[in-house]
Amino acid sequence: MSGSPSVTFLCTAYRTEDTICETLDSVFAQTRDDWQLVVVDNGMDDAIVELVEPYAADPRVTLVRQENQRAWGGVNAAGRHAVGRYVVVLHTDDLVLPTFMERLVPLMDAGGADALAPDAYFLGEGGLRSTTFRGPVPAPYRVGAPVTYRELIDGWVPFYVAPVRREVWEAIGGFRSDAAHVEDLAFWLDLLANGFVLRCLEEPLTAYRESESSDSRGAGGIEVMEQSWQRVMERMVPAHGSAADKAALEVRMSWSRHREATVRARR
Image (cartoon, rainbow, N blue to C red; front, side, top):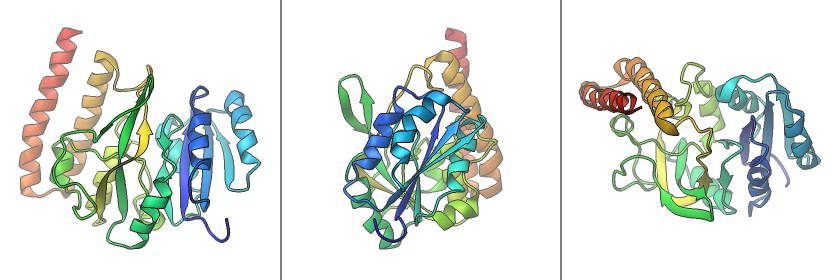
């Protein structure tokens, strides 16, 4: 690599010893080599450090250690070391496909978007499975269609493994500390509220897992996720949404509370 990197991958690691190497390998497998990788040992875990140190022999890799500050704190700590034109949140149980940068960097360089979210594969037993846009899929979701506040309210949450202009990331302040479990949704809401443009590419260039410890697994996890979603929406939409957005939120909030209550009753 010569010159400054195009992309800085922001990786926070906490109890991901079984997946972190696969995540880091996916960065090293990029067909472009103008990247920076910042890995935050988000819990002072010697086992994580032992796994990362061989990768850190590459000058493009920075290893940061800190006491655990949850996902938002790990990602934001990584962001403070970023020098790339674009930053990409990449948790250490996610993957980027080899052509992730090759496809997305030229599109970002062409302008017209402050963030560009590709589709994602689900990575389960047996390898990659079918693609999934998480939430109902409005059409058309391609480079030409900006995401709106209303679509986020209706349940559309573009995957967070997406290039974001670094100056936009810094202007927003990264992930919120008061949006536990739904940091990605809160970040997209912040991005739109500040007048920036989020677009999507209906092409799978990433992959995600749903581990046994995932926040969204099990009845208790679903309750927590719904409550977190409600808190973020109640705080952010009235402040920044239109009258139509607020009306849509009332409908969606009723649905969310009903789902939460149903799951609790079944549990």
